[in-house]
Length: 263
Length: 272
Image (cartoon, rainbow over all chains, first blue to last red; front, side, top):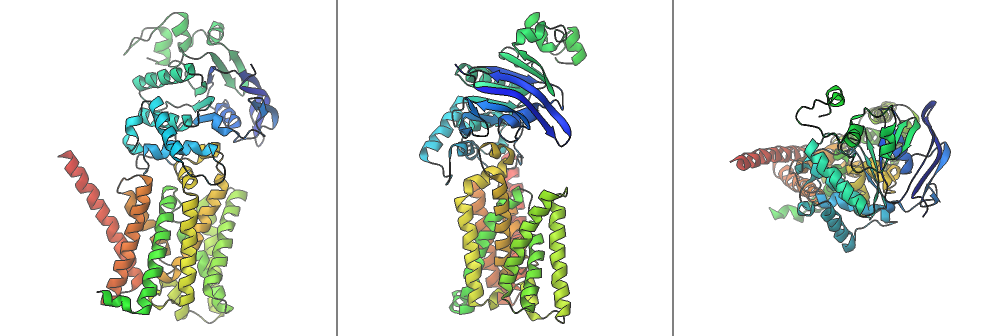
């Protein structure tokens, strides 16, 4: 089986500033990839390259074997941003109106919704258990519920890949856990997932691969391999799988937890 | 009350005012949410340059305003794309340059006269048949474009960055919004005048947004508020010899205040 996404020798600059340098990795069907790295490491830039929003200055990206410059089936890729551009709690839109916009990626000239689109919107909301909120205004929902709506927007076209850019920023820990459980379910149903995160703690149980980025690709492989490396074995999310460590809330006496104030 | 509709000039005023109100109020929802509310003022300044040029060269001021506002709108986008300036600076540069051109032309042409004042402050009761037709055509174009591109305009208004990933041509739609604003400002010239044209875009939308409805219902509410203001404004102006443009805008302001009162009362009732 070919790779779903192939990234070969990608380099990208903003003006004279190098943001990404010689990035090489591939993503197979069913992968759940955690993309980690410090601020300014190029994670969001790499995501935008995968979404076709930027063009790489060097290298190539292929999706389903097709070069990204020729790729047009954008319905196969679902994107969940950190936050919608103009969104505030007072934005006058119902959950249904927002989820329906996801179907625009499958439309060509006259982008009008059909009855099938309305059915697909409801199906997408059922997958994220938000079908009862169809006609509610988005601003009335909690942060976790809003992110589920954004996932439903991304799922309406039955994507093969779901790309999420720090989707749980500002969301409480219990909601984050439920959110990642949902991603795990979607991954088990066959959707490949790439999630940008500063911290893999919450999603540790589910990722199959870790890509550690800092302009260059420092590491790409399984999470176990990542945590086996001496440079990483003290990271909190590594303790969880290595030592079977579970945070004891509200305060944990594990040194890494105390240092990083993770718990 | 209905006898005012027997007069041809009132019939023209009502038809023009209602159609323009609908176009401005629908567009206004998109512009207010995208924080482009004051672009209408900028384009009104640009249109003034076109009106003055039209009067000087004996060209229909409408066409002068239309040409200037379309070129000016595209100039704003060009400056924004090619310089490091933000949108508000680009609007300021183009709009005030055009305003300066207009004032210069009028000084060369020996000052202001009643014609220019009617474009600045509106004269819907004196609107000519040709101007009525032009205003209606512009308004219908705006309404039709909003109808055909509704889903994409909604998508970029809510989330422009993610809309790009849907393959939506956000650059084209942003240009379209500015062009539509130019058309509505020019169409509103005779209704409320260039000085107040922006108010027909901003106020009904701002009022409707207070009602916390879905997007489609917000558009309907904005249009209803605008149309009611125009109808009531024309009627009151006729009955009491008020300035039409000022009366319409004041009524829009009252509508905004009423929506605030409605919001307060609603939240008090919910708390009980």
